[in-house]
Structures are given as structure tokens and as C-alpha cells.
Length: 418
Image 1 (cartoon, rainbow, N blue to C red):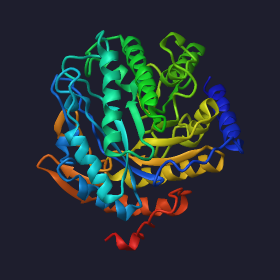
Image 2 (cartoon, helix red, strand yellow; image 1 turned 90 degrees about the horizontal axis):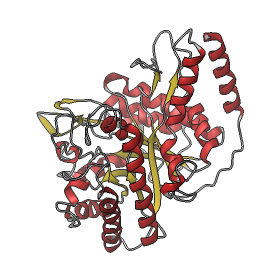
Image 3 (tube, one colour; image 1 turned 90 degrees about the vertical axis):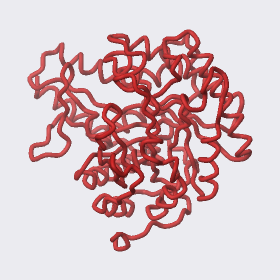
């Protein structure tokens, strides 16, 4: 069975690498190809404690300085979040004063902001299973777009209504890691979140025809064990397919009663990390870089082409990073894989390094991941220690990937990072 599976995988990779001249609609959507993401979760962690990572990293205190640091790396586009629990202190009452400060910092520094309405976090009195979740979320979307257009009357706004429904429905619906703290109710949570998602998109587009919707979901590969039975192979195929459920619901391919339809999604964002590939029915991840690579590991290039053939929409890597000393190797690998995807015809418009500054663990705020371009720690959360090996690797990566920055300032050379 191992030989059957790997032979099929090899054949697939040959097909996707040979695929060229896919329909590509070039659009000047982003100010830079390389982007930075600021961890903006405000969720309840596994202990029921509210964790506000924009506060924990002190990004809100030093947002202008954080933005200015990006110039050395030709990064002019960022992902930010409004933090639902912070902007709606009471039902249907909104306070966007902090978001206003963030917008003004972007204006001052020339940064383009992509906005997450809900990035892992709901008000204390709501869960996705609450009957008022959808109307409250739709109202929030309407309030945000009204506020945003008061501050920024012109131009295109890019919005992610709900980040990573596939992941948060597993975390909160299968393993009780966050609200609603359910077990084996992942589908119910996913269905409820997607229902609100669809209505939120429609409210945004009704209010602002220039708004673009960026959907962000994990991009994964799930494989059978070695010497697998046919049942295990089938299970891996099914689990791999499940990763597309949210996007398929949004465009009406499944669960049409939710109101999904073509045209709701403008850009597809995929979040890809070193632990996004695992063996079905286990908690065993595939190694991505070692002396004996696992032949079941799928290239990011092949996964992007698979998604392109499924949706034919512009794409970005919406999140990617690696902790500790492997950061330089990871960003190089990602850049080469993305260039190969572009060469194969994938309409890939950007790569977002997420987090761009380090962040602590949701469930243990003393444990900082050391996965950012700039590091911090619990004793000095305001610190921004540039991790030089990562910085140099990023600058090198920018020299060989097809950078569609549309005339942005050139990045500095690696010799200038000392």
C-alpha cells in the first residue's frame, strides 16, 4: 500500500508541476508582495481567560514604530484585527477609538492594512452557537464599514470577516480549547460560524461595493500511515478534503441553505506552517526538513496548484512562520515554493509573515514562541530584537521571488542588516 500511495502522489506532483498557463488575472491589490501580520487574537484561552495579544505584544503602544521598521524589508501591507471583544463592550454598542489610532498610524507611515473583523475571539456573552451570534456579527460588520469609510473615504478596503473557521471550529468545537468549549461538535460550530460569515460578507458588500473579501483558512495535507489499509487511505483522502468545507460553503457548493454564492470571495488566503501535514488518525506530524525526508510530505507548490484548480481566484499565503533557529530555512523554503507556484501559473499575490513580531502562547503567556522577525519575551514585551539570520534570509528570498510590489521602495541589502 505504501508503494501505491507514493506512486499516486508522485504522479500528482508531476501533473501539478507541468500545469502552466492557468487563467491569471493580474490585479494591483496589495502595496507589497511581502506582508507582515500582527497577532491580533482576543480569544478566551483553554482556562477561560481573555487573551488580547495586541496588548500583550505592546503593538498598540508602539504601532507607528512597528510600521516604520517594516520599511527596511519592503513590507508595506499588514494584517491587523479590530478585536471584537474590545470594540463591542456592550451588545450593539461600538467603540472604534483604538482602531482609529491604528488607521492614523497607517496613514502616517504609508502602510496598507488588511482588517480581520473576528480573529479568534467573541464578546463574553456570545458563542458561535448562541442564537444572537449571526445578527450581532452582521451588525458589527456594518458598524465597522461605516466607521472605516468615515476615516478612509476612498480606496479599496480588504476585510477578513472571520479568520480560520476550520481551525477555530476544531479548537472550540472538538477539543474544548476555547469558546464554546465543546467536544465533538466541530461541524456544528463550523456551520454556525459560516452562517454568520456569509451574512457578514453580504452586509459588507451591500454597504461598500469596493470592499474585497479575503478568506483565510489553513492549507493542510493529511496522509495515511505507511503500509496503510484501503480504509486508512480513504480516511486520509476524506480528511484532506474537509479543509475546503468552509470555502465551499461560502460559494454555495455545499450547504446552499446558508446562502453562499459565487462572488462572495475575492481573494483566497492560505495559512501554512511546518505542522500543517500529519498522518490521519494520529497526532503525528510529517517532518518537513531532516536527514530522511518523509516521501509523503507535499510541496507547498503542489498544494497551491491544487487550490488554484479548485477556485481560480487570486491567492496569498496569509500566515506562515517557524519558531526558533529554523526561521531562515523556513522562509527560504516558502519563497522558493511560492516562486515555483507562480511559475506554474498560480495567481499568488503575496506572502504574509505571521507573526511579524513575536507573540506569547495563548495558554501560557510566559512562553514566547520566537517565531517573529523581531523577538520579544515576557519580561520585555515591548522589545523588538531583530533576529538577524531570519532578516538576512528574508532579504535573500526577496531577490529571487517574483516580487509584485508595484513600484514600492526597494528593500535594503543583506549587507545593511548588521
